Length: 351
Length: 266
Image 1 (cartoon, chains in turn purple, blue):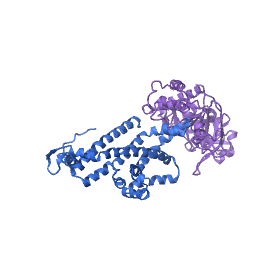
Image 2 (cartoon, rainbow over the protein chains, first blue to last red):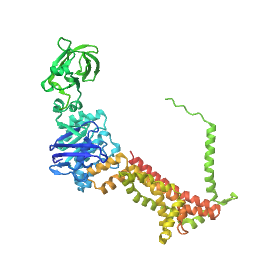
Image 3 (cartoon, rainbow over the protein chains, first blue to last red):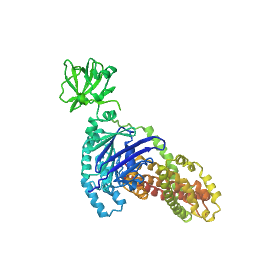
Image 4 (cartoon, rainbow over the protein chains, first blue to last red):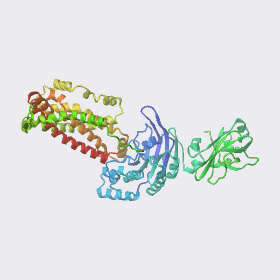
């Protein structure tokens, strides 16, 4: 399948619903040709609204602008936008067979029957649905339905593929394998895709770049690693992965310290004015109790298979979560020393 | 779990038999009355098909009239009701919500009153008054709410909203998605509506009694007429014909509806 790689420009795109609710504040985003971008955020953050604006299923406020390959599509109705969309519920046509579902977009465009057959055949191979061509959606498993929905959406070679929580309806195990399959398929198609999800693992596995959204705004855009390591906003740090929040009292701020009761680390310069700092659980290092390092007691230990999660309490009653390799021998009640790599600290306040 | 086989309860069995007899005896008597020579002497007077053939010669035309009328009524409620149901289901306005709630009102008003209103308004339009069209209008008024209600609730289902959006994203025009996707997807509900409209129309006597003329009679009206003006045997034979005509049609319709439900339902 040869799919044209389309650049998407979202310019001051906003949505206010008729009842006055602000679905989306004006957002700006450029999606490169052939890029897979994830809109990631908690429910109600506006990610689905933005996707539906791209699809044309909602009308944007005046002043908003959406460009597909430099062509203004803001006023175009859904039918004319040349998009493919995969819905959370798959929205397959229940009375049609797998192949008729996939061919639907071609049929309504009046594509000749032999071309339809050929394209459907290719897609059936691509998404591994061979042998199920004549089945109805009701006779398929969740994963198979999802693949039919994807094949149907890309059959018309759309400029843009929109995925609305495409894996949310699947169970955990299946989700994981389909996630990799989907990531692989999108790369092979080379299509520009916008993927909406609230699942950070899914977004990290599928997308080239992530746009983290909250309260109708895009907070930060970037690839997974830079968002995880260098979040520009505390919300991004907290949403992507887990963080410990370490409060700093007035004394610690004045003296430029990250204090754990009697012992303290010096605070990196760029965090000196912060009233609290953030630290990922995997960056909390534990060593046998020694002088000169803060003492912590293990309060709870949870075995998570590949790793072990420890809940720690410092002398000044701070609670910290730490993640250790799965073979860690530390037990509940044990007293250890805490070591933190201050380079890994992130700001908790927004500037 | 331990399932205990129930002990036979003679008392319950007796009640069941008694209730069944109470319900079936009138049917049997009514049917037999149409098949005996003389209702007063009963079976001793001997069995005959005389009354049935008499009914057929006098009222035979009402059978086809009723079936055709019911089919026409189904056709009209489909053409009027399905788009109306769609419009109601998709409309966001407060007016359409209110309209939906008043939809069943014509059903609550006695048919006689509706018929009277029709006669007062259009009774002197002769070609209408003298044709089956007048009865058809009455039947549509009475049955349309049932079609709209049934189909409207199907259109409102979230999965229907989603497949309509899916069809739009694939480039389908309104006509393409309405006829090609939505209507087939709610086909079981449409069939349920058809079954209801057909049943209501074919048995309707209230409105029809007021709207009919001696030349435009339906089966139930003819039945009432025969009970009122003819021998009891004739009326009973008429009932028998009614049952023989209606039951197979309803069975077939029900069978089709079930088949569709099993094949296309969730």
